[in-house]
Length: 127
Image (cartoon, rainbow, N blue to C red):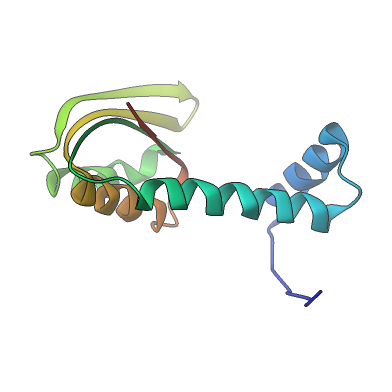
């Protein structure tokens, strides 16, 4: 099996070790492989979306990046039927978007959030 090196900050490494222990993985590599398999599966599912869809997009970020969220949101106003913003703890915010529109455009919006390093969590649920 090829070896791939990755860099992780202390917070992610601690989370990885916690998951490894709590989920019973034999090592970090096995836990990382499981995470990658889940990510690949989720992305394949999104790639199969077509036509007009209804979805929920959940985004968690630090409140100092509200302006980043606003910037992305303005590009997709035609998709967003409802947008809820909530403070969830100290400086963390949660954005919940109810979306109705073209699957390709929904995917683009999701990717814009996913590829922004300032977002902690981005999750798309199709209905």
